Length: 569
Ligand code: NOJ
Image (cartoon, rainbow, N blue to C red; front, side, top):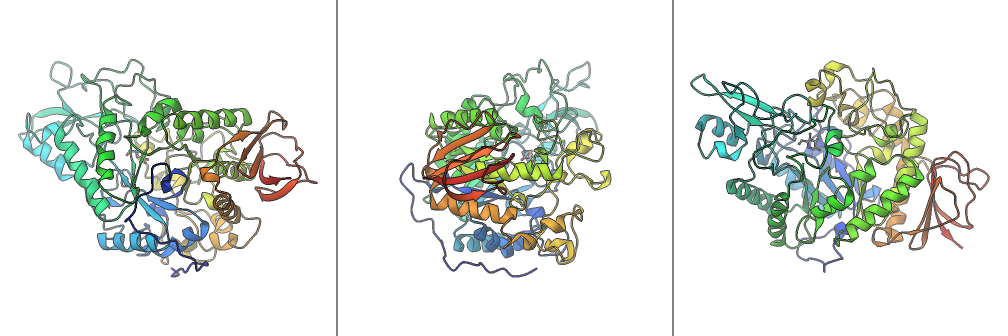
């Protein structure tokens, strides 16, 4: 793997000595790039990406023009949910490296002016975590058991689960244990996989452990945390049945679940975020908490980012909006209104490691297809690759023009499509296995990304190994094929991020422009007019200097599925 150098000599290194005044913090307008460590770059050659691989490739992210990286979990874990099943929150899993490797990564990132956000998983840990093992060993009524959600079963002999909750990954949300003496015991709750027991957040001991974990990573110089399942920690007392159980179908259920779901968005969860806010406030340097809270409507998601709670929340309503001008206008309006009302920036996101890549989503015939169920060989609706890419480029150009903070998912800057042709036996997502293959799940967006078209595993790993097989078509999407090529998706992203910084779009505001027709999103942010055509008919453009175009214009007109940024006369 090449040892990268950056193409620019300018450095934006910083330290944590200072905090900005309220309203000027870096994260309000930042572009944050999600690294999925197992699929980014593999320095060890074992086919699974690692921290040393990330460090070697950080220069390319600085050249892309992002402000920060968010690393999905790299902590010790049996990897039953790709690291979201943590068995030690304060150590690096050997497959990813060591704490020293993390320090090197963080130091290199900071030298390059890139902040580092790590992923914290407080709703559950791994069933291999010593805390859960202790709970099993300690027996009924022990303080160790009270750290998790153990309950007696229903039925004459406790043989039925305590309630009717279903796992987000499919199947029951409860697993019965066998006590040390061989007798059947109580059940424990796992909203996700059996290997991910939920913590009991009504127990102060759990609060204290997580304060210590936060401080461990803050002391190690991280700039913030992406917080997993930030709507799920508190469960309604008595754990009532759900009246209508959502069908197993992956994370989409949590979007569509009715308000009354007793394990989502309980009011007490906000006390946790106030507590964490206070921990971060002990540190200088504008550290940030970003909520992964699948909560709708946006006005409700905004409760996670009130001034004494978290700082950002992912805008999943935006992610779920189809390529449709009216829907986009309305979600942009709603987002800005909801987050402004609590003094927080809106965020924007189109892809992550849990959803079908947007270059493929926008190529499906069902415009409202669930982003979270995956696509596989037997899916009826297969994406049109060219259409999807064209729309994805236009959608990304629109997103990067918006004020607030934007999240990018590794590979979207290359226009990568979802990988559909994965054999059942290579799929690792527990969703696929817990639904007996009915829901393909998330492996298709997690395939290791291509760097060099002619290298083994497209430069992901010198050994050519790759934990999920990469399709041959990745060669044409490889970074080296796109770098310096003016029409490429990579150059589109670089140009957009450079112009976003130059024109301070992240700290700007949106004014709608009229007169372009109902299929067009037209807005002004500072000096830039942004015009996105989601319809089939080409539209006339105002006179001005073209700053960015997601596709070629046709005789001066803006064709279908294209976005431009213009400085109008
Ligand atoms: C959300 C994460 O993004 C996802 O990958 C994970 O499976 C669940 N939370 C459970 O931790």
